[in-house]
Image (cartoon, rainbow, N blue to C red; front, side, top):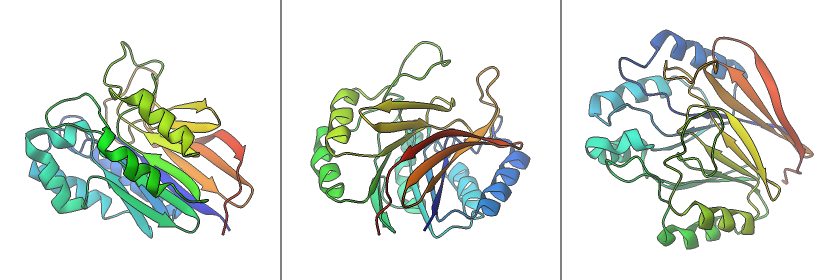
Length: 245
């Protein structure tokens, strides 16, 4: 059994940054991959306005997969966008279980503030969700560790240390983040932390093309690929980890 998961982030569906033709190409590539799960770690919009959410939803609806896990980013909760997000995409924090995989998506945003914060009030719920032998994935918008090639560090969740300790204690396998528009991978105590770049905007750092992540899980290994939006891909990581069930 193999499960394919696509990880997208920071699509920013609003002018002047959004690239509609590239977005359609990305969707075409994702549908060719035929993933069972698509996880989008926030910043669907630029400013959290309703017309931006409507635009984002029109593109996301074109992605064919059995399950989608979508959480907000700091841009999405501007101008009371958190309420619009909930109406269109459901709860800002959620748990999804699928074929031996548990995904916990957390809203790490604060209205009209770019800084991240998970919050102690969520820790118990997160721990309870991860009380399983499943392959465990934690998704949030803000990066939990500094990302190279992004300039001066900022916006790491103020409780990042406590969150990392909680995730390691829960034996989480994979953490998915966005926010910085730079793809990067860290290994911490056996836990993989995977940042996504931007897939379909011109908000790119110098020399770093648009991309998204593909995760493949089977009974013996999991692999991470960086898929370039304009074509091509590369294997980023391969690790042993049995997918049960």
